[in-house]
Image 1: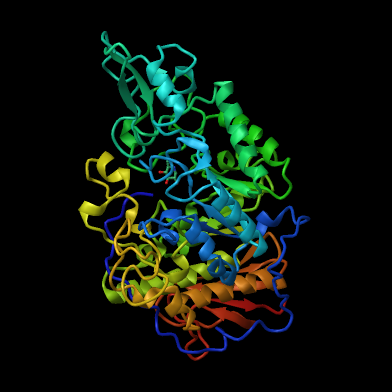
Image 2: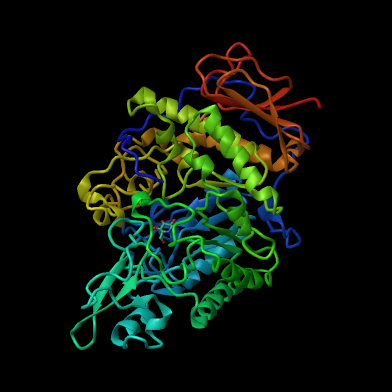
Length: 572
Ligand code: NOJ
């Protein structure tokens, strides 16, 4: 998750792909069962074990009211896009009431919708209309911290040290004779100290409160039963409205190390931490997840996926025991460079991590916190470099969707969007300010989606002034344009998801590795016999035996070119 200087301003159009039988735009072949698109199957309680979940970053998806910021009405209007894509579920980044210091990850009322995005009626409509299209809806839950505008925090500020109001958060006296030093040396994930000193109601310099992220995001203290009870109320509130589950923000950070011991500052980095960092991954976190699970299990088919930045496999697996999280994000694939060693090791590690507890693995190539994969994989930011990044991102989609478990797709990846290099003056991520302008933050991955037309904002909004500016040269990347092109990245996504959903070859929880030439990897789904081969090199290689189902790039004389992947069905 470290900031990368390699960002690009321009986007190459989808590569000019020559028609091949492997990328057949025609309707599904025989043997493929059509999706019903009418009713979710209430008996399918384990759907999340092998789903495709699409992350909507609501500010950037589609704007229905012309204020330049995406909203629930925009998502409803574009549900057809998600249905065509064929995803099983959407996860909405937070839409709860928030002053937006961290774009919704600072919640002032966890049981209300922020007016910027709409209201509860709009959320209900979204859930109903998504369900009618066979798409489940998961909310983003932010239990680790609130906004400073949450009534609990304002009450804490006007209460006394040691009061019940302060005990919902981590308020402590400072160190030193006059308490002017923070209670410990912790730094914020966004940069700068993790403590802010308040002024007491009588005007004197007062206690300090903990915020692992921005000062506008005070951490809650889960040792306080009131905090746990409130979270339970929030879970029921959304589940009772028909929501199908939650992505749980900072799921590994809800409990802090007892006594709040100092951390090792030598290893501290903006947007990164290690497993033994006392700010995260403390034993007390598991009891909280068990409470969450007990409630979610009262709603058949509902699921949780936790943001778990934990490297050690057995510690990661502990979060996925049968009475804790259903799924945990594994970010190894999103962190891997486009090399056989890194990709294979990410896959092996992720499979090993969940095997011990019988949880499904999860896969993601990107999300709203990391650089978009096209840019990550691009060797440089020239048009040719971005085209290579696009080829590699398409290849990695086939790798991701060939794997057992649940795949998460970040909105805009289906269009092959690159990260955008934004000018300093428009940067809106708190990381930019908090890091003292040393880390540019995550805005480049959050630029609004291009839907149609030839000029910005490409149908995202009626307002030309979007919350982050859109590159003028995205006309070739719009949904409209890519729908017309059967070889576009969008068409590849649609076809790949459709095959994965319908074909029996994608069955089975295990994979076997094939021997492969240097620069290549190949694996087979043990039960279903699907083979996926990836060529990270530049020279075409022979295919493994089998019938070709799909390629990310046309074959060259029957061989798999560099920066490409193929799906085949092996005979046995
Ligand atoms: C993780 C979220 O994905 C990120 O966007 C947010 O800034 C932090 N948690 C703090 O809530």
